[in-house]
Image (cartoon, rainbow, N blue to C red):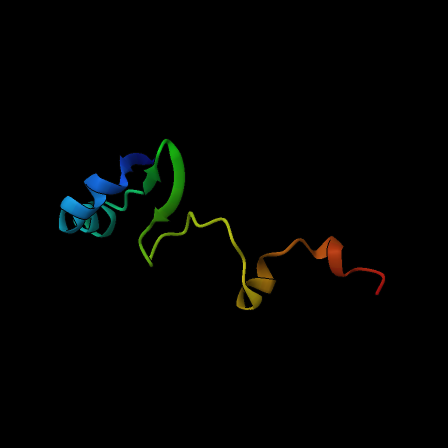
Length: 67
């Protein structure tokens, strides 16, 4: 579960948030007026949920059959 902080909290405690993300592999969601604006995750995190062209080998083989 991601930690949720306000934009003001993020600005005031940015170094601490970076430590939480980098050293503890936590995820931080920054919100303003109760609406999520950004998500801070480690560059080494495998929980991004996104694939790029280098991850094509992770796609199921069924997608590429019969083509």
